[in-house]
Amino acid sequence: MGLTLTLDDTEIPASPAFIEFLHASLTGEKHHVGRWYAQDEEELASDPDRYTNIQDKARYVMSDKEGVERVVQSYKYFKEMLIGRPETVQRMRRFRFFFVIGIPRTGGTYLVKQIFRAIGIDYTEVQNALAHDGFPDLAFLSFGERGNLATNSILQLAEYLTMVEIYFTEHGKLAHKGGVVVPKKFTKAVYNFPLVQEMFGSQSNYLITLRHPLAMIRSVLEKAGGMPEGGGFKIRSAIERWALQDWIRWGEPEAEVRKLPYGEVILGYWKRYHYQLALAGIPNMPTAKIIPYGRDHMIGAVKELYGDFGVDLEPEDFKVSGPAQFDSELEASAEKVVDQVATFWNDLGLAFPREALAERI
Image (cartoon, one colour):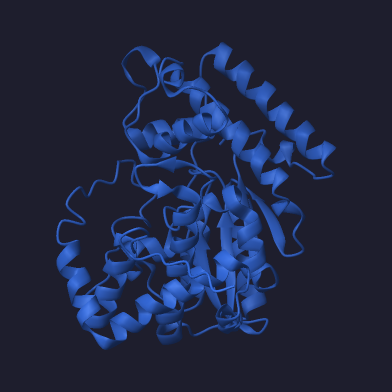
């Protein structure tokens, strides 16, 4: 059979974040870092002009021999994942990935920063797409203006692999269990974990962060500028957009979700995220570790990592607030949701650390 299937980069284009990364790597310019690491700053990140000159950067990358090679490499990874024969990707086995997985505002950024410190890399100079959780944008099957989101997810994962290969070949200094340590906050890994497991399973550690939903809701509100007027749901941040997408993914009409109270929307996101986390089987992975939110839990986990790495370093401090408090109706709903998630995990043979979340910090 002589069938040939051809797709070009106009149908499945490279991601702007990947082009941006390649351009900086080729020119020696600073990577676009943003403020991903400043999670204790309670303000929204905003950079609307980030990609205004991305076409110029793309032309530069594609006029450079190494740039072309790197783009081609990413599409090779993409092709191998599509057909289920990841042969070239075997070269990634020289890296040991530490994926920090958890819903936003649960301490994951702190852990990623501390691992970067352990491997001798200044986290304030690492591109946000390489370190943080917006990229690759793993997603369920969905058709839209950007095409098939699941296909785009695979391409972005292929681009991430290429970025890792470039960056950590040059900057990686710490080896652990046969691989150069690579930290990554990976919130969206839950949405296509079979792909992550196939690509990284035996070469990865999974640090799962958990926090009481009321404390998470309070933190999202602080980051987004407070409760919207009237208490209804409103999108002002990536986290709120992800919450809406999660409801839609589970079959709820967008217009109906936008009519709901703010707390109910974020609480529903929290519940379904932790259902998905359990269904994906991530807590049951041999290298998985659950880390509840809190100063002692977080600092203790980092000290344990430093001990495993053989690094003589003290963790940065971890700041916490007092218990989160809302009206009685939302508080009752939150406790009901926590019970539901704990029962769901238990039914799947997983231990949910409910008592560790009781302080609601």
